[in-house]
Image (cartoon, rainbow, N blue to C red; front, side, top):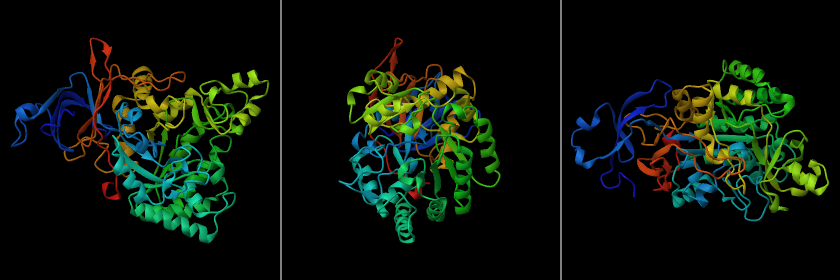
Length: 498
């Protein structure tokens, strides 16, 4: 039962309030009533708003703890998992209260196909059952997930819904069909468009095709997020393409999971980050990052170079190799890694293709938001699914001191809410929705590893979603207690809630 269930009143007392704006934290209290923050300040217990009495209030001692806005995971592939597993434990256990779905060009809506090949397999092979965004909204409402959902519409999904063949540019009629579908999705509450031009299903799309769709998004005040056409040798050209697409369409741009992938590209953030700053002189631009040197996606032969480690996350043809290194499997089979990759498809893998110095530079950049990019359907997922947000605090704030506590929170809350057009969230202020996380700054840390990726982080004390206590992980006598998912309180964020 939620702590505030009896009265609907919860007082978070004597914590360090880090409000999500990036400004300095301050010691104080916060009063939650229903789904809203109704008071903030010091000594609230002794000066409650008129008509509220101490006996009615559940008081939570937050001494030594941080009170922050609920974290917003700006880059997820949680479209289907919020329906299948609405407890959303990998996310709420990190303090995440809102997930942005539909990234990398792949969203569940608007596409219904019980039999045809789905857009990739990042969302699960049998998940594409929602012909409209309204259908998807109804499914989210029925599932009542433990967190909120802000949905993007995938360009690749639109291509599957409107095109007969994906190895070419859309015809004028096909593009008009995609535009109409996208317009309906935006009217139904989608927050923008995403693309995944890196993937085969969208690679043939010229920039003009994406620009035309981005113009539809601009009319609705949405955003455009992109998995660049290349994050390797041609990354600068791909960044210019993305920048020009968004600029010509008149829409804000988010560069997804920014990285310089492959040993030949290590160090090139010294080139790409100044380019982002230059583009920011003419357009609204942001980027996101996950705090690891390995990425994760489907098994692709072109990503197997015999140099970087490749950790297998799933394989339909040989499920027994899940969790093993591709190099070890190839050696065991007496073949090279590319041949082993071909034999294991379809499948997925973690690719250790980044350099730590590049990751650090991206995290520290003032326009960078934090996203997990976790793949919840993988049998042996990348640890970012369970640990990305606490890892930023443990490694990049507390250990490496690359950013301040307030900057870390801002990158997970206020900055993300602003860039993704999510209203009343991401900032602690009177009147805002009561999405709040209480955490221990001295102990917050990820425990998920590449060997054991499904492991709950430590230091997250309480998570409120829309004023309801959704997660609690009490600690007593130095021993970690059993975490509880206490309530499902999520909702699909509408355009009116931007």
